Amino acid sequence: MSVPRLVVAAPSSGSGKTTVATGLMAAFAARGLAVSPHKVGPDYIDPGYHALATGRVGRNLDAYLCGPELVAPLFLHGARGCDLAVVEGVMGLYDGAAGQGELASTAHVAKLLGAPVVLVVDASSQSRSVAALVHGFASWDPEVRVGGVILNKVGSDRHEALLREALESAGVPVLGVLRRAAPVATPARHLGLVPVAERGSAAVEAVEAMGALVAEGCDLGALEALARSAGAVPGGSAPWTPGFPPTHPSRPTEKSPTGARPTEESPSGARSAEKAPEAPAPVVALAGGPAFTFSYAEHAELLAAAGAEVVTFDPLRDEGLPEGTAGLVIGGGFPEVYAAELSANEPLRKAIAELALSGAPVAAECAGLLYLCRKLDGQPMCGVLDASARMTERLTLGYRDAVAVSDSVLAVAGTRMRGHEFHRTVVEPGAGDVAAWGLRAPQRRLEGFVQQGVHASYLHTHWASEPGVARRFVERCRTS
Image (cartoon, rainbow, N blue to C red):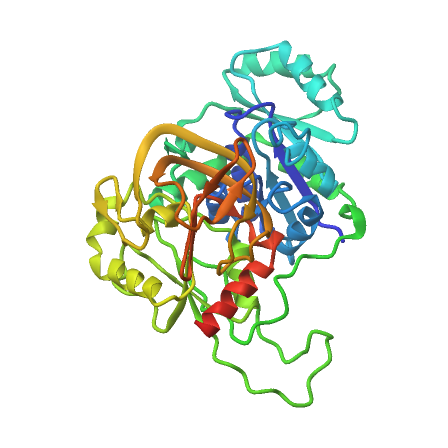
């Protein structure tokens, strides 16, 4: 299967990958192309900007969380029906999971996709040295095809001329030159860029500015031709699918992807002569809104494919759970920024506590964990967990190997999964009487809480790596 595609990479973080990748997506979309947006790694924030630029759900490609074998199928799933795909890299081109070689690096994903790489170089403090830098990155791994370079933060016409002259000897074409431009700057805070959901029209304006900057400074024709030079995705991969059609589609909302469409075909593709009575679809409430923006699109799709009706709600605004809620999923985000508003919504806090007390399945990751605590920075939260959370100066960041240490609504004891931690908060105690996970690195420890139907943890996981998680959760929704 062939999809024209580019990977936007850089020598290091801070070079301008997000500006260029988002700008390319917006510029190609403005040309009338259906653009599929992707992000290497576990980042939740950049895909929000990608979605604004393309009008499609931003999707992650993480060879650590999901395994290298799922990268191409997940890419093809997201790129269905698209004219072109743009994949934004992570960190430096060759930076991967700590101590594990190229695993989960941008270069690794580019090779798994057979995609040409466009290298974004911050040229603000160099001239002739840019040639040595680009030559080194282009020749380091012969399996990585660096098809062109975009020079970012160029100061003047004279500076541009010096850079172009130097790069003539590197054998890598210059496909764009971008000058310093304040309108494309995006505000950041303790965990990176401020998410799209919190910025409203300012985010729309920033994405438009990125598109205009790239359209003016880059050779879009040459970049599109480079994307179309990619052949079939290696390995004969078929698109990933969240499963066979659910009995009920998700309710489409602006904040959540629509689930798979129902069909009368059986898993074998044959139409059933008689349809068995359908059980009512259990409603799974999915937290959204500005405080809970971290969620992989595939999670809602997997829940829907398992037979749930997925309904998004906003804990900042909605005073009750969606009607008929049988299960609750609260992903990551920034509850610490909205602690006062979340605390003020007492009716919803009580509804969530009552749902948890009833034994209904509740899955909470990171921000969701904080929300279920007694307090967050002194503000009353849902009180489901006998724990308190607070902000700290220390950043906890990294991939984790985990094993389920007890049976829960997500997994049976002994299930191994890979996850990611990214937070500046601490929960005390860090684990309940029954823990969620045993982590093996960087140090062995128990983490998270399992009680009744609640599974709460700092660990972000990608359910596509273990589809049984969603099936188990929905089954518990049916039976609890």
